[in-house]
Image (cartoon, rainbow, N blue to C red; front, side, top):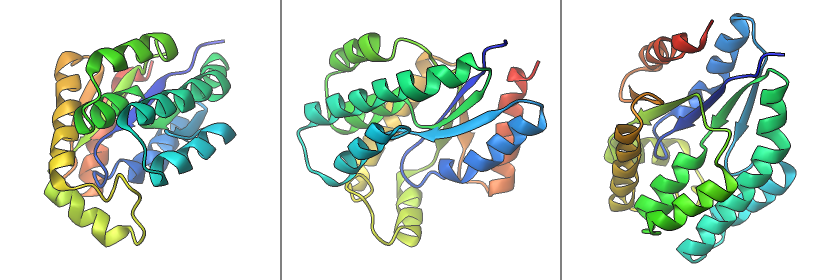
Length: 205
């Protein structure tokens, strides 16, 4: 059986990535492949429990990183790997890049600590393609305020935090240009999805 493809979606809060999860899955299915949507933190019963802690419980940045990677390990072992091995295409709302952006760029956790955790917990599988929804943090803030009546502790962060997160994402993309596809998320949804289809076209055999 052919191994499935692994697609990750990344971007700051309010960049609009979650809007495109279902359309991407429908696009994949229309091209003859099974597709599974998942998310981080989350994706498993334990991961969803840890998600609630991460989104609503204040904690030390190092603790935050450790809990995030603990949830990720469970996600990989219990959800992502089994699906890929069965030929299912996995579409994940965030993956390891988010830790380098949020805990690294935003919180200031040293990158060598995150690299160690990545090598231990999430060395594989790596996404075949990562779609980075890029948007100015000021505009992203407007979207969050408009569409989120009860923002979590990440969504309540100030613009300076998201400028750091965005810069960390762009640095990751510059370091791995073959994996990352940067999308202009300031456009209308149809225009963004056209960018997505162009990026994903390389995965269709």
